[in-house]
Image: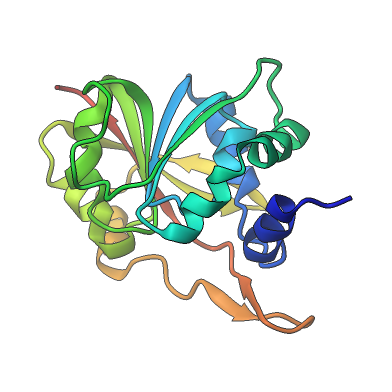
Length: 209
């Protein structure tokens, strides 16, 4: 029997093909990442399928309700995880611009995807040598590029159906930050909307604390 947790996740991410599983798979295979911080996550638990330790932060009540069913969330992660260890996840129901309840420099990866202002507010929680991944929603890549503790190390985009880590071309990098990732949704033949997996992601590395 499909749980309510699975139904909610399916309706928002699987049905719209919005999981971005291949992106997180590529990151897990390319980079040594143990701990992940995901502010503005809503109920997008796909990172937990590839990373054993993920902290989710969101102010939305629907996200709090979703994570309140801890057994249901754990069961969905257990079904989809690719690593051997038991998954660890935690949800924090608050505005991520307020101080979070853990030490600075605690995480290997910051996901700065759709909330805006994530890099400015949460870069301090990333270890030296850790990474920030953004699709530049609401100028997060611009914020990262202007942060003296971060350097751009790669663009990540789909090539021949797979995510590839591309070397930084300064002009192209600048143009992408100006223009963003373009249209992200289209009408699905089955009705409703479907995610267009054509985003370019920006990967930064933290070089100083």
